[in-house]
Length: 318
Ligand code: MEV
Image (cartoon, rainbow, N blue to C red; front, side):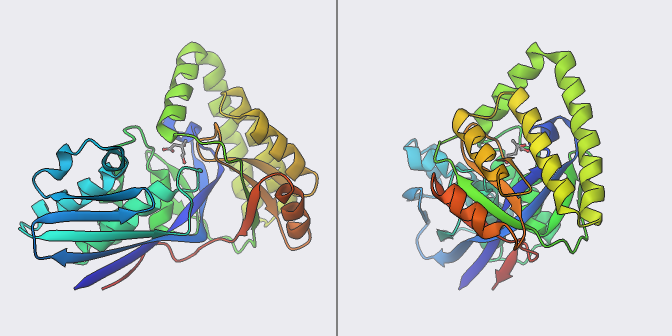
């Protein structure tokens, strides 16, 4: 028996990092997916195959593996071992991950993978509700990133555009806005948990400034929600560029990211880092009038592609 599930990647339109401290963020999922296929195996071993590597070990010893691939695959190992425990099954499981989202560039590959794997592996035994999958995916992601706000897994599960805050969770935004997003990959590697730690240090050393930036970010997000409702791309773009200036203040931009953002702003409505920063991707807001110009402009410097909003979220087929 096979259980297949897929989940979309995401971009953060507004509010990354500040969301970790309770500020609202606005996110949307994109039309690039991760697909996880699971099947039961006769032996008692767990086999995981992905672009991060390949591991295979006995159910009882897999959590003790120390090689680098096993460390990166900790959330997946957690999902498989916890599922076998929950359903009291003494079997082996093989999982295969196929991704249209490059890993480690801020487009939610890790969250999408946790969501799709949680649905695919539990689907071998029972179809769980989306909220249960989301809870399990966040628990799995916490094995490598303790302080995640949960925003990324939420949008990868439910899809579409949403506002999210840690206290109230997510709320779908029913805007028919036709966003054209250009995503440019700086090719500078980054690790989300390190960047989140860096911002925590910044906050400890600049308490008043950080409080003021959180207030300004909250105010900006209220304006962005109105602009989304009014489908006002000009205002949204300006607000994205303004959000970028806050991200620069907290130290998560780089020279290359700042350069790409300035380039993008020559043709797009606005641009900013998306996700943790320190590398990874820049997003530029466009529509059909300036999408191609922006792609051409950024494409002279780095790899870039256009993305649209995914409205489906987690999909599973058993
Ligand atoms: C990473 O995609 C977004 C951060 O805000 C961390 C989080 O929300 O968990 C940097």
